[in-house]
Amino acid sequence: MAEGRKKGQMSERNRWCAVLVAVLVVACEDPYQAGLQAFEDGDWATAIDRLERVAPFHLNYRDAQQLIRESQFAGGVEAIDKGQWELAVRYLRQIDERDPNHAAARDHVGAAFYEMARRAFAGGDSKEALRLSHIVHSTCSRFDEARDLARQARRRLDEEEALTAPG
Image (cartoon, rainbow, N blue to C red; front, side, top):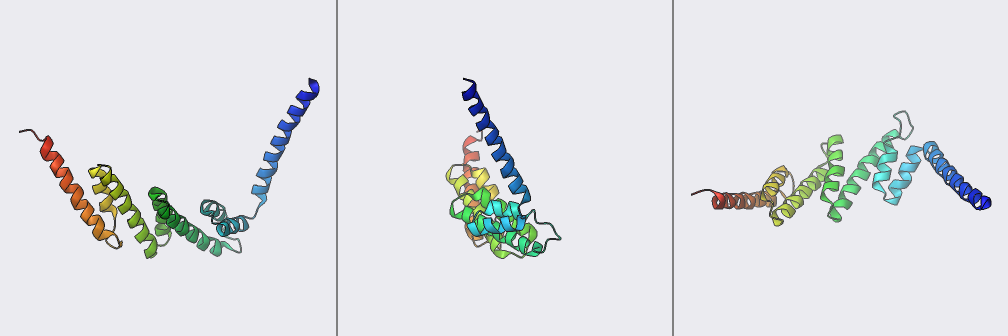
């Protein structure tokens, strides 16, 4: 019985040792190299996380900043492809904050808002569809479609108000 308990205790100690070793490896890794590896693997969230840890005095700091933007864009486009509109907006808005001249990122943000508006309209939420369609900027390739969707949502809201109005 005591021998079985020792084995159990040893495995618990081994688990803690493994966790400690993993923490030390992550703490000691070069964030640029770890971020570059994650970028090459297409793991955008990890790439961004690691590359944001690169200190400004690091030899590859500027390259890390560029890789962060590329990871955010790739992550946003991938999220759009998967229909994960909120995640796409989160990634792509970060690019727009860093680089307001990044037209492709702005266009994708608008397209994601349009798709969210379309989904809300199809689900019967005209107020949300109207709100989201108004977020689509005039520079977005989906602006005309968003404007049409906003008109449809406004009409639906007016019809609903007319039906519920007294008298």
